Image 1 (tube, rainbow, N blue to C red):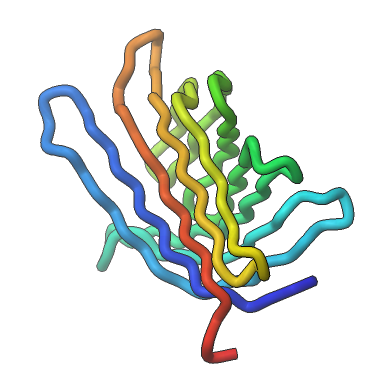
Image 2: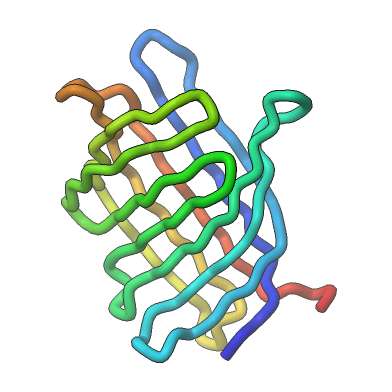
Length: 150
């Protein structure tokens, strides 16, 4: 089953010595039930504004049991993130300004959906580490609703 959806993504990052940063993006995309039981969400987003704007194509896969998620990001920023309860994952984060190796440590993960799949929500709380040091306590919230305009 393939559906057009509205997507709201909230990213919250707390870095030592800095104010908490909250980034909210909204876009449209496509939701699909995969043959292997996973849920797939695909959408484009633009982060930042003006000359610092970065375009990203996202593919989000939620495990069939709802206990984990993989995010593949392409475009100006490229990386692969995996989340699941107590999962530690090493990734290379590529930006227009260079690459960084980071570790993603999931602290909690939750996936809920409505009975008719018209609404879904994914919440992952995690730490980002570089060189063995925590550089950010983070949270991503992805809210998906069936599009009313398509």
